[in-house]
Image (cartoon, rainbow, N blue to C red; front, side):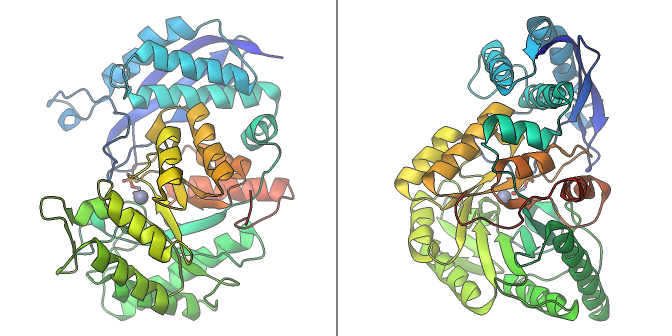
Length: 429
Ligand code: PGA
Ligand code: ZN
């Protein structure tokens, strides 16, 4: 059933922000070849494993990844050569070996970028060796055939660390939750993106883009953006609500939290954690918001608990920087009611095996989960298959624009065309 690893190497390539990242290539003894492009975040959680960067100021302002590439070829490859690849249990052994070989708690020796690239390439090689699409391989072998098409969350307005405007909140997403299929949801996202562009032009606003392909208009109040999104949804001919299009936001509150004073600065207002919850509550009252991610800073655990207590029954409360896709942190969050869902990013925890474990913990706890790209991306489409396989029903991959974002959305189109899978956010998964 399994083949074995014949060779493994990595090269430096560029990501969507023009920063170096890795492309890992793995070849099996039967000739099967698989590659993986490694993503990279800008608003990272303090508990994330560490990307290895060269720090050589003469190259890419210190952001080169030549050492990480060498670690794949010179340190990881000799250790993994000859190991079986074919089943998910093989992948679990490989991922385990990667952690042991690194030997640190945050993958800082080999680099989380090197490790995640190897893990993704190994998963892909296993699926290719089995002659199975990646989503089916992950779903059948590991997730008991719960596969479903996810609701795409299109980040159509960018702020925070992803744009140079005055918007404190990082992401404003439209989610066609009530669409009849994934394919129709993508169409809705594209049409709403188009009507939003028209509205911004009409208002004399810039239609320049942020890092995730969303517009980055010169507005500062989140409520102004939410009103604009509702208008764009309606102008495109859709309606808001659970049977139509809903809104999700990722304020990414680490970015506007003053930890010394314990306050949040939103559009010129200084808010404590409770006042910030009030502000979210008003937004949820006025606008069709269904999900709020990183509403409080990762260090403000009482703010998180208050938010979950007050709004957790009405909206999905998602932990990203708070939980960093880490199974142990997810379990802590479940126990202490920090949130009601986790954002899932493969490079935030280091390996595919741990990502699947993080998803399983969410599912077992009755939590939601949303699969996510990073702001710095390649055309790798691994997360599309992961989203389908997990059955969590939610993905965010930026705006329906720019090649690195569309690689994921278009891969989902291909899966939708090739298999008849249910679509939507499951109540139980
Ligand atoms: P990042 O942001 O990829 O820049 O970390 C994405 C997010 O906060 O969800
Ligand atoms: Zn986030």
